[in-house]
Amino acid sequence: MAITDVVVPQLSESVSEATLLTWKKKPGEAVQADEILIEVETDKVVLEVPAPASGVFKEIVQGDGSMVTSGQVIARIDTAATAAVAAPAAAAAAPVSAPAAASAPAAKAASGAIASPAASKILADKGVSADGVAGTGRDGRITKGDALGASAAPVAAAAPAKVVAAPAAPMTQSLDGRPEQRVPMSRLRARIAERLLQSQQDNAILTTFNEVNMQGVIDLRNLYKDKFEKEHGVKLGFMSFFVKAAVAALKRYPLLNASVDGKDIIYHGYFDIGIAVGSPRGLVVPILRNADQMSIAEIEKTIADFGKRAAEGKLGIEEMTGGTFSISNGGVFGSMLSTPIINPPQSAILGVHATKDRAVVEKGQIVIRPINYLAMSYDHRIIDGREAVLGLVAMKEALEDPQRLLLEI
Image (cartoon, rainbow, N blue to C red; front, side, top):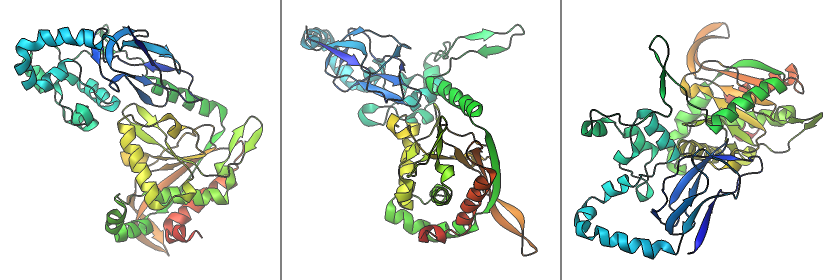
């Protein structure tokens, strides 16, 4: 017998513990090296735990939902038992080897289809079993797109009298017969709640607002978007302009890029901009490192990559650690105005909203312009209204004359 331990991946210094989700294998089943055995949820990301070697899944040391730490043993694989177990299994399967080969996808589904964390949540919300979904990802993995296109109908047709999938938590009935469901918070959702409360309790949060005429950015984008996409392989969006405008303002007003540590103010000589991204598990804030040194194309490519990997639960812990300033774009969901909450230990955050045509006055005339309302929340402990207002005005001016961003003036 040769035993290989399955251990929790290395977590970042800021993450002390994690939660095991659902084991994909049962003791006695064969496993292949690098096959995903379970996902580990931290307060920032979901990490996949692959099998370190091929063999037979011998023992689960820590069950579903267990709290674990870096390097902790959570299961064991018997690598020497592979031949001993596989041979009888192959012999038993010999009489039906031909039909089994013909229905390989069904066999794979029966043994437990592998779905990404984002796909798993979507399937659970839709009440669809992963066993009935054909995966188009690598090694048959079920992707978010597969889950979005999945329907409960095929499973329901096969067994119309049965519930397709059990809910995440048992339904309970109130006295008047109306259903309720109690579901525990995920670690990410609980951490979000904790940090938001911490931010409101520890910071003296105020918000200043301004409106921006986005015509200059829109005209520039319309003029070059096709050539930009052909040249760089990514669409030219608006977020890169907001990032560039924010960096320009932070350079002029360093307090907006600072943070509080006890009774000290830390002035950061770099510009790591957090970009709030929605994911099936909740809000995550990956970081654009040294955003001041990035081109518009690099910013667009990185943000697109963040969005894709956030949806798949593939962002790494190190990618969401740190940051000196954040940008939250509620406009993608249709928000017109909001007061964003500071992401501690940062001292300011920019809220971007939907751009809509509005009647405005220019040189005494009423004209129609595409207007975006910006909101910047700031920690009044170290940032006075003057710096906050002037900082937001600097962002406004940069966006209304985007050529200045390219010339850095």
